[in-house]
Length: 275
Image 1 (cartoon, helix red, strand yellow):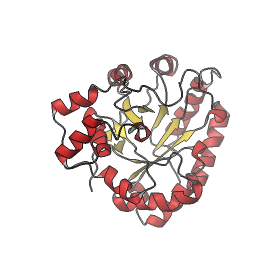
Image 2 (cartoon, rainbow, N blue to C red):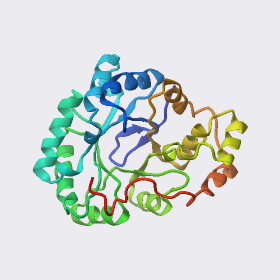
Image 3 (cartoon, helix red, strand yellow):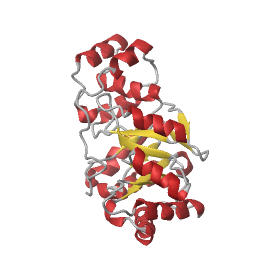
Image 4 (cartoon, one colour):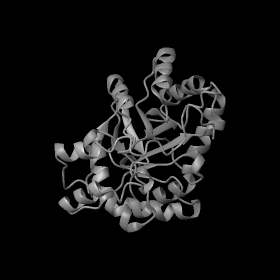
């Protein structure tokens, strides 16, 4: 299974399809990630808040896969924002993962009410400059938050990981990303399974001999999004990466695009979420 890479604006390459471990119980994480690695995933996305960085690290160490062939990303939690706190949290995540460096480190949420994300970003700049992380980005940032980082620091995040699915395609934000060389990464790409019974998606799945989830993931890939589906079911883990042997037509894409606004955002609002 060969997953294509996306080149970030600093030259680092990231697999376009990775494996997310949000809500994977810590005591199950190592086995779930091992299953994903065996299925061909080489990019793993975790976070301090998930409580399962150690399980990811255990799976990585026991996999036998050379570290340089893996892409490991984690995120800084809201309570650890601020320059010194962010640097300490990075050390803790690195220790829990049991690795010498990270491929990607993200600010998990902007938490504008705390007004620390710019200061936090300067710590990320230092981590990148010191070579402790290959790329730095953000998660759940709006255009307003991104513009402030650009204006006040001049360092452009390599990507922004946001809620994105056919019911909430974030067209304006994706356009902003494109103008500034920021890659779009989608969390909850399947709307937490809420779209899998949609008649149009079921019909497209039948057309290609694929499951509705595979059709949605293919839509993301053809939009240029990076996508990190999560599952704990071995069959679905394998199915979610089996999306590189078919291609949606322009009409198919338009059909899925037409679902915009059907359900809207299902996760927290970045403007108000504090965790």
